[in-house]
Image (cartoon, rainbow, N blue to C red; front, side, top):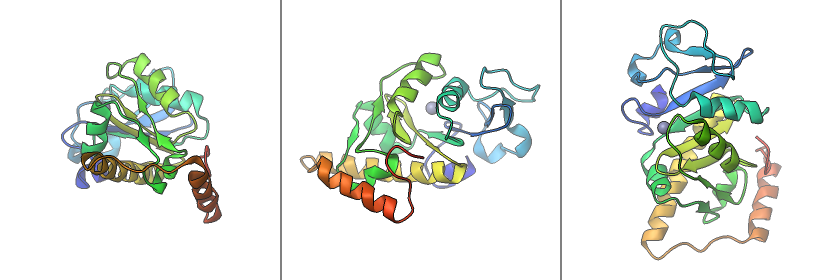
Length: 204
Ligand SMILES: [Zn+2]
């Protein structure tokens, strides 16, 4: 959270992060500025939503984090933020197509935008799980972006990439729209990405 804030990917108290733990997950508390966070502010909870007695309440987005951990065994960490360009695309409810080969880093030939549901709702959690199918990132309509990975470092790095891609895609839209890569071109990218040790399509 402190790095998201320092890098301008989040402002104020928006955004939240979690990591999988033996009993469920460790998640950032609700309404706390990143600068004020300490290890003691992190909330431990199981994936049904019961938290260990803690000084702070968990992020209101805990149902979304729990839904992802319940359905994606390979996911070890989740980063959610309202970064500027990813959020402006999400507010126009646009998927990011394969306008740049690095869209492949999210696991497929697009970064989907999950339909809208109220923040903190179980419905939003399900919509995000659906949009993340075979992917490691998605946009969330009228809300922001979310990334997953085996660990926090990977999820954070992907959040940076999604924000950069969102900014580039938005710039393309402003000058008449991008030329989108076709399936064969993207398949070649997936082969090469696999070739230099990065995750292949559909894997975290
Ligand atoms: Zn949010």
